[in-house]
Length: 250
Image (cartoon, rainbow, N blue to C red; front, side):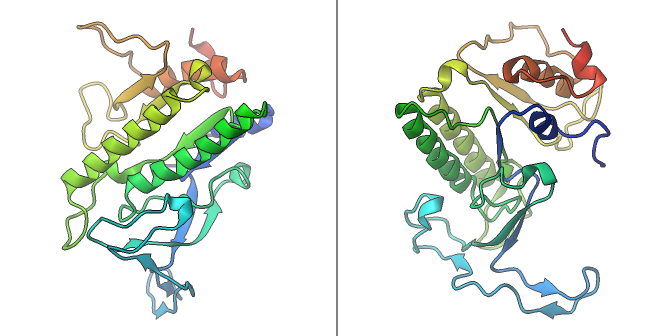
């Protein structure tokens, strides 16, 4: 894969003066339990980051920015040593406490982080301050289970973790004062070996808002799922199309 010639959605948002915020997408995390290497291909291993605590073991307490509470998972959850944006437009526009694609960090932690931010935006709104970004991108990766390993998450538990996290995020937003003018779009990062007879890029999509209508039985989403999703975004965020496909959609 390579970067699109027309740029990314958040670059278009930045160019048009819109506010945006990321939770883990296009963010690179270094974890406290990682060892550094002198050569990215060969090694040797070098000393890792000097963290006071490398992971939250079962029974230990999570940091407040991760929601607090006791780690009830049967494996140690690695802590973040450093987080950096991988695209210049994202510098200063992402949650520093949100981990990237590490499946040893349950999605419940990512949901907790988002909900904590949402509560802050709600508190600001109650004080007549509108601080919630116009566009938010959140990554919940445990829908892609890793290989089984002793003491780690199983595929079934990972999928259940992801389902619960998605539900908690939707519940939090839909019961907030932002629900009247918010839409949530959920798309798998890829088809997960589920390519069909049309295109291997097609994947499941959900559109959630108080104005969404169910697709009638026997009806199907149009081909070109990414473009179809994009059709909802420019009108709602009020910025220009970023490629020919989105410009030509009704």
